[in-house]
Figure (cartoon, rainbow, N blue to C red):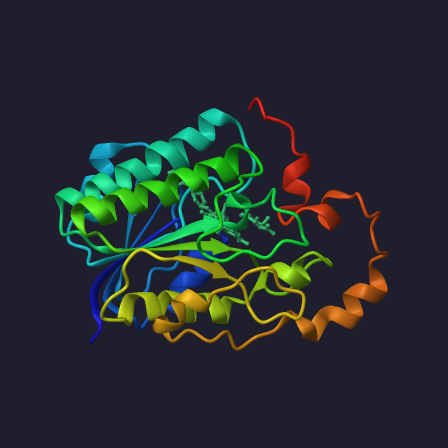
Length: 266
Ligand code: NAI
Ligand code: 15L
């Protein structure tokens, strides 16, 4: 059964614009939102501008939707003010809106930076304690926790997806361990909205790799099997990119260079 109305936040961003292409058939109607307008609306798409920091706007946005693919927010290390508005107040506004409207199921784009200070020789499953690598990663931990609160108190289901590196192809050696293809990401989104019971699992968003760090065995019930693999690019990347020093951030930590970012002031 198709969804009736799917909300895609962050629709003008990298993953939001891919979501429009890949999820077009998943719902009868698709509501898109972002701070900035998107172009070329399809017949079943509408656009509603909203700042995630605006509670009233969020309530109107979520009203009437039975599913939310939440890709909106700050996606890299930035000032606390920006992160607070998009990712902390933003997820609070989203969950409050969900609670007071139809309690839609939510796909929450969390990040590997929620666990970025784990070392690359550590192996994690869904129950690994968070270990954020900056303000951005800590805001993702907050989002994961808030989702859990609204599941326990109100039964709102969320897929809390720690996305690795979702780009057309892996861009460097580190991404051989973290790369997620668009196809595998949106197959996961679809499974999360289609399964009869989702709950509130933590899921690692990564395609196949021989140098992986993350164990998704507890979400076998979703029936999600990544089809793509970073191995296709391994020989090329290992040949073209010199192996970094053993104490370089990319070699030491799962979050790579994010662990070396300063606290941004703007
Ligand atoms: P992006 O930066 O391209 O898109 C984010 C969108 O959110 C932008 O269009 C921006 O205008 C919007 N936005 C920012 N602040 C907002 C606010 N206050 N109110 C309303 N809209 C706001 O990021 P991308 O790559 O598309 O990522 C989407 C989500 O996935 C983000 O939550 C990011 O943290 C997460 N993610 C992405 C990864 C990737 O590899 N692309 C990896 C891990 C997590
Ligand atoms: C993220 O969380 C970012 O949104 C994305 O731009 C990438 O940097 C990714 O993590 C990564 O770790 O490669």
